Length: 106
Image 1 (tube, one colour):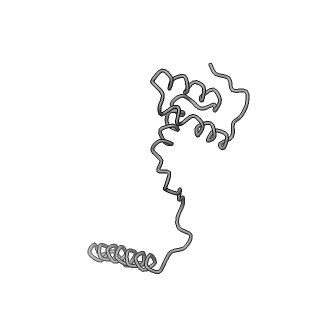
Image 2: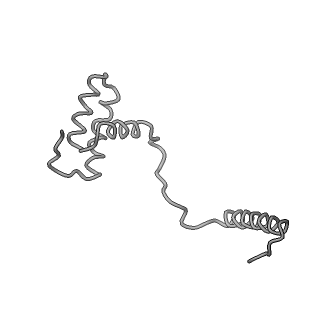
Image 3: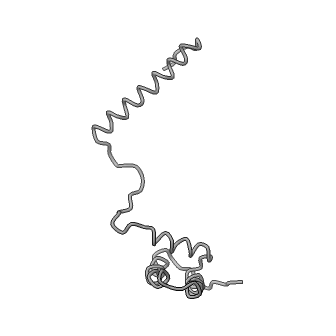
């Protein structure tokens, strides 16, 4: 059973992984196990979580910037495409309703 005495924030965890990643990737199977135990003890993560974090760091493209969420504003070409798609979908729905004799609601 592992007892963690202190809380480690996200920035500190990232620093731990950044320091150990090169050594972890080059290490033998036995050395990787030792590194995992040490990092788990310091970071408070489980062994599997630590392995996943190292793998995520390895697979990340260093040139790519992280983009989250939707774009702040849409360009005119995107707005036109969205309007066209919405019109196409509503026409489809109205055609189905007309075919089945349901009233058209707007």
